[in-house]
Length: 145
Ligand SMILES: [Zn+2]
Ligand SMILES: [Zn+2]
Picture 1 (cartoon, rainbow, N blue to C red):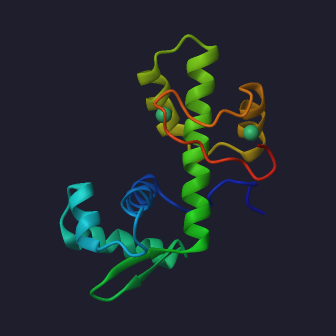
Picture 2: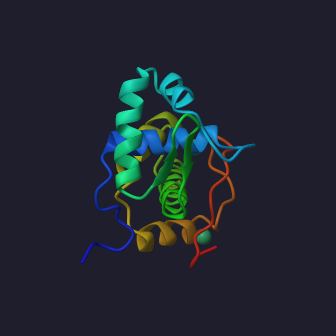
């Protein structure tokens, strides 16, 4: 059985693409592959390859000539990763006299792998913050906030 909250099979690169699609999403429901390629600084062929892998893993759906739409699973996963990043970063920054830059860098390395239980405990210790020190929104935990 997979560990709770851990994403079984996304690679670090795939997570980057997933987050990029999510960032481009506000205000519309479909994101062009070319925009993803531009945002990642890669060729369209490279971006398409990763988007195809994300589709195989059920994170998004590709529409020929139009672009990609995140699935429910993809949205949940990207929200989980963003929450993990921002809670971890806020915790380390607030309690451990680590610079925000270092906290953020470390959060990027572990964000995908933190368990929901640990992140919820950190969230409680912080008093369920709504934003990280960068003033970015922290998605609430279903069983926490
Ligand atoms: Zn932040
Ligand atoms: Zn909370």
